[in-house]
Amino acid sequence: MKSIKKHNGLAIIEFTIVSWLVFLLIFLILALGAYVFSLQIVNEATRKAARLATVCYVLDRDNIAEIVVEDIPLLGFSDSNLEVAYLDAAGAEITSDFETNFSAIKFVRARATGYGIQLISNLSFLGTNGFLAAPAFETILPAENLGVIKANTNTRTRCPEQIQGG
Image (cartoon, rainbow, N blue to C red; front, top):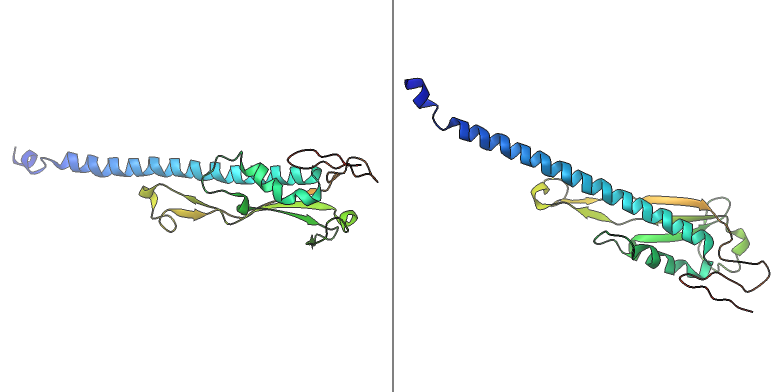
C-alpha cells in the first residue's frame, strides 16, 4: 500500500510531458507543411513570370512581376522579390536597350529572391525567431515571340493590356 502512495500524481506529470511533445510535433508538422506550400507557391510564381515574359513585349518586363504577384496568396511576397531578365544564347544577361538587342534575346529568366517565411512563434527555435529564408528559385524558358505578333510591324502584345500600333 505504501508504494502506491509514493507514486501518486506521477501519471499527470508523465501525461503533461508526453502531451507537450505530441503538440510540439503536431505544430512542427503543420509549420513544415506551410513552409513547403510557400516554397511551391514561390516556384509557381517564377514559372508564371517566365511564361509571361516569353509572350509579352520586352519593354513590359517590369509589369510582369506586378501581374504575377497580385495572384500570390503569400504574406510579404512582393514584386521586388521577383526579377525578370532576358538572356542571350550564351546565357549572359542583356541589361539595356532591349529593342536594339531584340534579336539577341534567346532565353527568359525569372528569379525569386529575398523571400522568407515566418513560422509560428512556438517554433521560434528554428532559424531567427522562426524566420526561415527561402532558397532562390529560378525558371529559364526559351524566348518565343516576346510580344511581337507580326514581324516588321509595330503590333506588340503589351502586358497587362494589348496595344496595337501602326
